[in-house]
Length: 137
Image (tube, rainbow, N blue to C red; front, side):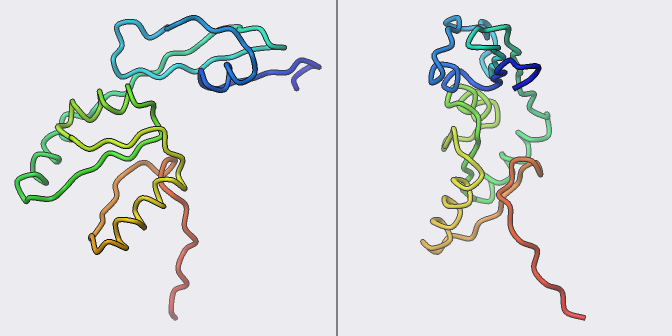
């Protein structure tokens, strides 16, 4: 609530869940774009379209991993469409999208339980949270 009005900010699924009418798409021409909607009292006010930019060295890093015969999987909270576009630009074939941080952690634990050695890269805001390990004196 802001000034007595119910403010809602989120993705298309959230808006649909709350019966807020949204246009079919805003990200026309943006293959790897996410839409963030804003509504007040059940009425759509607007949207922001955010597109990922893949750093040029990222593709080279993925290619280097492939030369070492290492498997790469993109685990992301982005929508499937955004994830597939980003993975394609990086040369990654395996994609798991729309994951919460705890979903990513569960997937990593699953891989480890199957005997895989796992390394994870990501931004601090998207990494699964862990309690810091106590340090010995």
